[in-house]
Amino acid sequence: MSIAGLGPHGERAVPADQIQFTEADAVVARTRRFSVAVVLHTTTSDWSKQELAGIAATLGLYSAALVEVVDCDFDVELQVAALARLAHEPVDAVISIPIGNSRVAAAHRALTESGRKLVLLDNAPTGMLPGADYVSVVSTDNFGLGQSCAAMLSTHIPRDGAAGILGYGIDFFATHEREIAFRKWMGHHRPDVTLVRERFSELEGAGPAALAMVEKTPGLAGIFAVWDVPAMMALRVLAQNGIDIPLTTVDLGNEVALDMARQGMIKGIGAQLPYDQGSAAARVTLSALLGLPVSPWVALAGLEVTAFNVVEAYQVIWHLPAPRAIIDAMRILVATKGNSD
Image (cartoon, rainbow, N blue to C red):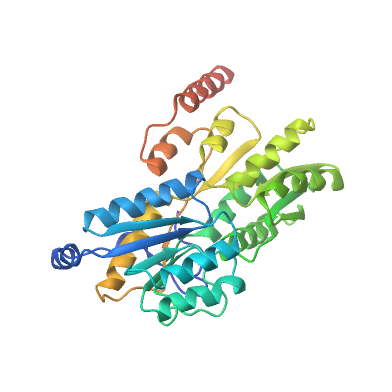
């Protein structure tokens, strides 16, 4: 997939694989032994675990220490407090995924003003500019992911049908991009489809929001959830109420991968490559610390995943063999398709 979207300020993307070091740069980095902290919205999701693995492994290659990982548990105040503390800690740089926009902008700006290099994942807080307030935003092409999810869900929506969007009720660039792209793709390719929307601000609200959307829209034929964790929360609540409806979502977490391989409600996934994104974020951070020029937006293309390529996609994304349960489900699916042919 090519990169379809633009950065937070309309920037054209520099592909992540173009961020590389000369041998001389690598030697300098290893000599200086930089220290880096990471501030995440959560450390418990599959995405976060892979993101951290990519950051840690790449920093280690250049003798840079990952000295602290902060789990903000989706709490704005925890993030603000962590950033304020890190502004006075002996770290050279911070990689952060801002929770929302305006409420965390001042804390991120203060970190940069303290002399630390700041690299952002996915989101740029309101009013912050690259080069002045932060080094760069490193992100998957979220616009492209939204397009993929629309295309995959479209095959399950009948003519003149209705599709739902389970959106995130927090001001967050990445999820907004996915939703905008989903709407634009449907408007261009499936103008016959009626779109409805429910939002959640807390993860626990994703399931009730999905159920409300189904109840308000008789004949709703499919749902796009803006990432995999709320998608699975929605799936469980819908299943408990006897509702079976196609869903597409973003991120190849273990639960959505297994449900899709078993031919459950998950029909397609626009997958990020979080390990590779973490590695890119680490390289961008080291580039900034070495005084090398860095693009304000560094992006990675996503990967379109269905039940028939979930095993190989899992290997690409996780850098691990797919779990046995996914492989077994895939074999059953392939055998069933072969018999039907």
